[in-house]
Length: 223
Image (tube, rainbow, N blue to C red; front, side):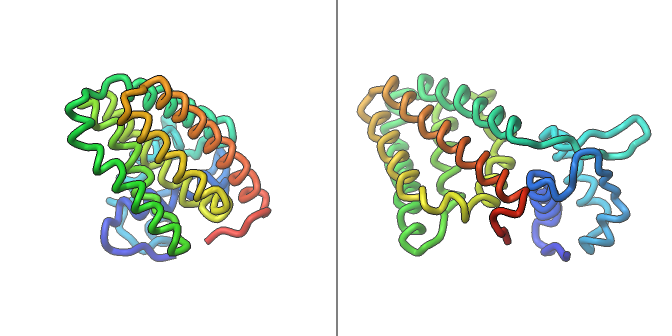
């Protein structure tokens, strides 16, 4: 498989992350720079950068002998990822100042509109979905929360992309969840917004666990 020349390191990262999440590269498998460089037709520099990011995401580990080994990624890891999201985003909702929300609320709804427009074109707008949630965190202006969100966003993006076909029947419901969440937040009902967010993300976690399990066992075809 070749990798596009634009954003090479990111292309490699997403390619390898996808394979690890789908267990196409199983736990204990070695990722060798030389072999990957030949397979993907890129230099070893971008490979090295991608492996470092995978290590930061806890998807691989570097042994004392310098070899990079794939770590287990299973359903429990997806559940943990979404539990972390719930804690992070729920707290973020309590940290948003009214004037900041007033200034950014139109953008929040614009992301929802973009999701709806894509759905009507029979596609899923992953960027707008994540941008909506990212904006909730960025509105806190808390650099620590923003850094934590950023560290999770790559894995979330890949997870959504690889399960897109499976979760397609729930897309209108997912979009509606975003509208209700935005409405509650704009109305100043933070507790209601937190409740809606928690329900939304718990359901998402269940969807993704089911989808990844089926994908990993050949129950769903993926691109």
